[in-house]
Length: 425
Picture (tube, rainbow, N blue to C red):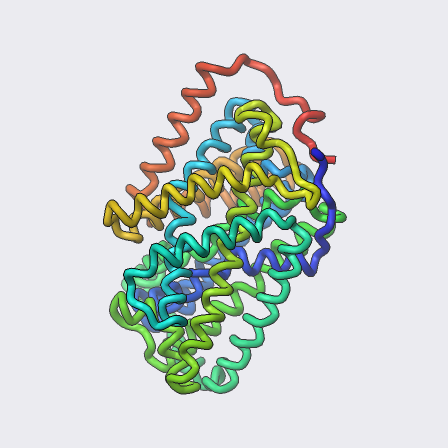
């Protein structure tokens, strides 16, 4: 079986977009942004959203026009050739070495709260969580999308309830408008942290081939989902700032639990931990699906063994999922044994995604019409702005991309990409 099952509609797509952007970041980013930007955090989120939205529009435009499981690498390949497409594919896969392990360990940490165990159990819970996520991916996109829809509905209900009992209207008093250069600098500095929330545009692009009507449904799913994400994060930023559940690193990581405890009592903490785990589980599950689709696409093009190009009866790339699982397992064990800080893995992930977004915007300038080219330039400027805040953490991505590009130039002949091989029908 080699063809995708077009099973996704706009509602399921919105649900999957929301769970792509709202996961482990929901547990810590609102508090971190308030701790860094203070009363200007609200504007810091608006600034970041304003920079990300043009990038999202570019992905929505390219995803609807060129639906492919290859996502950004496919767009870049159409613009610059097969070598660059495969190099970006390798860059995306390199994120497996630094990204999913962090999110899985954060999810596992909530299980220690649920079962009241020590932190020594995090590794065991991480491995159990990974196995569950692989099974989640193998069942196929339609079953996974239904689960995502249920998670999103529960999440929205929870945030609305917190807004109600937390007096969201009164919390508007914490908003202060930056008026001096120092104030604006404080707000802009927080955008480097907030950007982590929006990592996932590239993952959603891989799903474009599975929408029933990509030209109509994919833009609705991506942009509609992002609107819900921004509203959810802004609500939590206001509530956390109003109820002062932020501060040092430990307090920030527990900010939502502290908020729930303050508004609903300590007995609600374990229930909240279960919900937090489910959200994180769904979030990373989508990432594993995206990585698997990338491997499947690269196998079809000959960059990887063709055995990874096959799909099971549910339309899922089962062998590619298992490969992703093996790499992620290595990453989890390495992070545990090395003792490296989670922040390092997060920063490397940010840099890799930002480089992929930047290359996609450059490719879009060649692929879209003259009017859309203006938007592509705006998106490219936004990427350049974010590079300033990520800084030296971009080195991992740049090195991996250069190595991949050198590898492709030494092994691949100069052949153009044929649409018949890359389009998913």
